[in-house]
Image 1 (cartoon, rainbow, N blue to C red):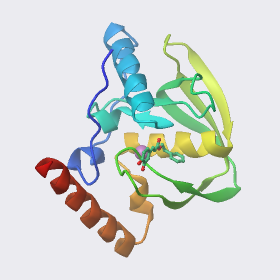
Image 2 (tube, helix red, strand yellow; image 1 turned 180 degrees about the vertical axis):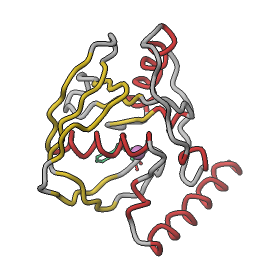
Image 3 (tube, rainbow, N blue to C red; image 1 turned 60 degrees about the horizontal axis):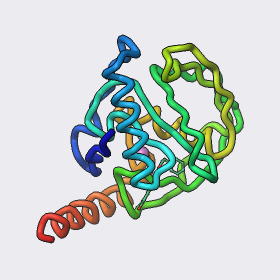
Image 4 (cartoon, protein in one colour; image 1 turned 90 degrees about the vertical axis):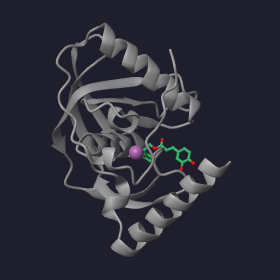
Length: 170
Ligand code: QAP
Ligand code: CO
């Protein structure tokens, strides 16, 4: 297993649309292991394949307190979303240091394949519901800052480019 480099906003590769996983084979299982390692090492609660420059419909999530309940969603589809919507603060491993409110469905039902390639249905509410929607957005080439005002987005873009330049100098 190996932690993978995470693309940083505004990297244009974050805007690519992911294709369905064709088969849950050894290559995908190795990618899952690497993505889980990447997420845990970065202390994140969710990571989409897009963020590690793999443009296939695969996400990993762990919103548990003890960080020992990995959830793997392959080819996820939202089959139901509550009419009720909630605004919650979000962050993103691709936009470190930035947190802001985003409105999303309060609860969702998702159908996906698990790491064994079995079809599963997951009912999510609270933080898990937010995280699933956030990560599924990545697969569509959408980053949470795209929901913010153009002014906020422009400030974030400038901040990220500056941080990137500082990191390259170091
Ligand atoms: C998406 O985000 C999410 O800025 C997952 O310095 C976030 O794991 C869904 C992270 C919040 C719902 C609510 C962010 C780590 C992790 C940072 C993450 C940072 C270090 C973000
Ligand atoms: Co994210």
